[in-house]
Amino acid sequence: MRIRNSILTIQHSCTILALLISCQTLFAQKMLRRELQVENDNDAYTLNLSRDQYYSQGVALRYRIITDSSKWKSTLKKKIRSYVLNHRFYTAKHLWWTDTTDMDRPYAGQISLSATNEYYLKNSSYIYAELELGWMGPALRMGDLQYNWHKAFGMQLPFGWDYQINNSPIINIYGKYAKTLVEGDGMDIISESNIALGTAFGHARQEFIIRLGNFLPIHSSTQFNGVVGRINDGPKQHEAYFFISPGLEYVTYNSTIEGGIIGEESIFTKTSEKWVYQTRAGLLFSWTKFDFALFYYRRTRETSESTYHKYVGIRMGQRF
Image (tube, rainbow, N blue to C red):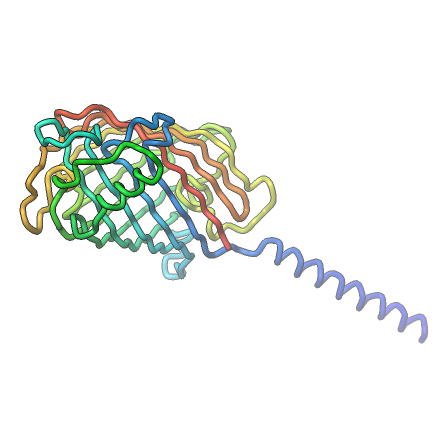
């Protein structure tokens, strides 16, 4: 009897140990369902500090969370909802210009809030939908912000904000569809189609993304912000890769150049170029709880008087 009790004790101990190991494994593989993300675009990051022009700076703060997608479980891997605070401003090529006869585009400032849904499909594709609501114009006092910032750091002061785009609401929708076309070991090709409609921007753009390195599929990759909701499975789930993405954009409307559709007419506007060629390239890294992305953009001229434009974007995300 004593031997039998000892055997039972050992069996119970092994069961408890197995349960503890299982719990530890589940904890280690805990799904991270939320993310805070910050993205900053600036042409100063090209290391040409004398240049501060066109799309001069943009900041986006995002809160992202996995939402219930059970009713689409036959087609979806996951769905992510985001809430975004956007801040952007645009200037002419040279900040010291004071006469509109010299300026190649107007000044403009925007602040907005966005809500987005991202759908990661089981057929290696991705759908993005965004609604943006905000404001553009002198009421935001963007000129004062840039003037004081540049003054504090001894940079060239901007003198063209008196001719900025007038007050106007931002009501815009954006859509994106991406699908993997070619899959390979260390290389793939993704088609990405973008569209924008509303009072701020109207355009359609087609890109082809070529990725080289250690990357994951669309639904798990930082390329499409898909790391949220991925169960950690060790170093093999980390990413480090390079991408390049040439694209062609057809512009129907750009309020930062042509003025707002709604509101009082702006005192100085230009006509947007209809066709813009854009090239993106970047380095992307993702780990279990953190990712980092560095983007380079080069765009051809957006008005007949302007020149090409380049800027750099930096994006960081923290999951929890």
